[in-house]
Length: 178
Image 1 (cartoon, rainbow, N blue to C red):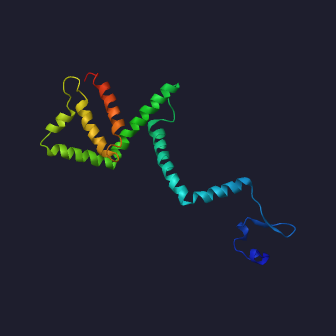
Image 2 (tube, helix red, strand yellow; image 1 turned 180 degrees about the vertical axis):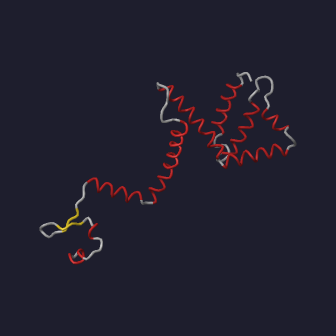
Image 3 (cartoon, rainbow, N blue to C red; image 1 turned 180 degrees about the horizontal axis):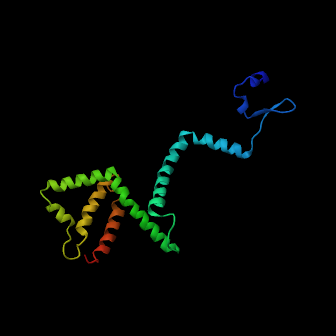
């Protein structure tokens, strides 16, 4: 660049290029400046925005867990206790998130409409009222599993894991006295 062009530039005062004592023009930067400039260029690419979208979602969840459920300070010691407390808090976080989910609410409302279409509250009583014996929770969970099958992905996507989870939960709850 010619010196006359550089000297007439309106942004000369903020320009990082400086004239040295011997009349040469130089641009000085450190390794940190170079890394920072590269990082900023990378942040402006669409690939970075796509990868960062997932991170921003989990950061929101982590922030909610820390601020609303107190996950930033656990009052237990030991690996097992810490894991148990974290598991319970994260499970508890799923309840309000599920309630806020439009997909889950739509599924529940269609299930209720379908149940009420059958005539009165008879179907609801069959689904939720405990029956004597070991099937205390089985009717409630059978309705719950129908809800989950419709909620997630293609049919059979979670079928094996869901059957194992429901079976394990039923075996635990059937031993409880209601």
